[in-house]
Amino acid sequence: MNDYLLFRKLIVPACLPILFLLGVALCVYNAIILFTCGGLYVVEGLITLIVGIPLVRVICEGLLFLARIAGVKDEPSMKMPTMEAPKEE
Image (tube, rainbow, N blue to C red):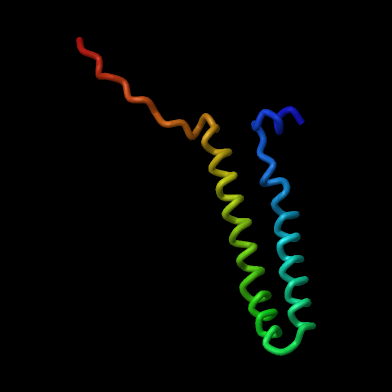
């Protein structure tokens, strides 16, 4: 728990599947509501399913990408090499 409070361990990768499922559930719920309205709302419900779910996936992948960048920058193997001045004899 101390690692989370001191930002040594990121919370986003751990809760990302929950955020993804929540986003998909909201898209499906919205589509069902639009389907029950009838008329032109049925088309909007289809667009919500076709566009909304992949959009939620892309947003979650972007969050994961940013979290991985934040995690990699602190690894010792990824540090930039330092340039030393040439030694004169």
